[in-house]
Image (cartoon, rainbow, N blue to C red; front, side):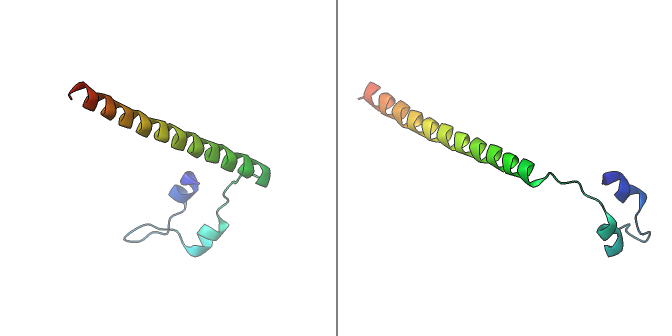
Length: 72
């Protein structure tokens, strides 16, 4: 895609692509099954990040409580 854009600009003060050139551009996309797998992977990744963020928040609260007990 990048190479196509680089080789086919409309020349002017600022190079650009015409609507027709953009319409003729081929962009490869994964099939529906692969898109589903990619979506599931990122959902699982988001869930894992959220879980670890909650664990981190709880540990920070625990640390805060321990520090308060140390200096009372």
